[in-house]
Figure 1: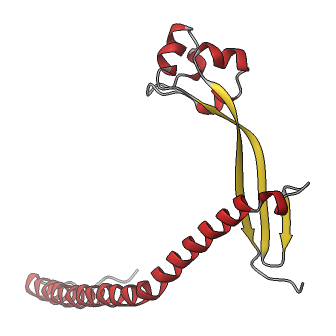
Figure 2: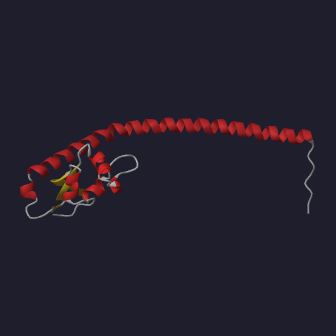
Figure 3: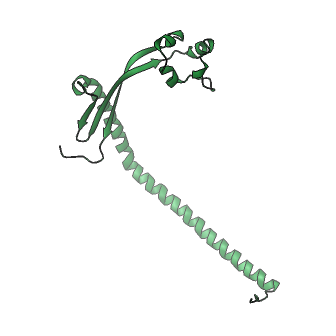
Length: 161
């Protein structure tokens, strides 16, 4: 086994000082480059945000318009069907019940000892209440009302129509 050459104290300190200096210089360069990178990313992000944000707003407006159209023309669009297949996507319509829960329902659930729907944060478990029978809903002043939902799907690849 080869022996390492012995290093005296002054040589060791000199090499350590050199390595520490190199590391310090490299750290400064790395930090400067990271700062430049962050600035460049911020500039590019801002540039693209100026182009992307109006598009996102237009998409939101189109979504509102589509949902309004679906609601206004539901009798024509969803006559005997819940899905309308189109070239650019599908229109979806669903009917179901939605339970309205009065503000004092939590207190009434406590009175009736319906602890299975009381969350530990002192709020009601809507999903559990919606599964209740109408008689049990009546005991807390809740009622089941008809509700409609409208939705849509956008196809990523449009097919020839």
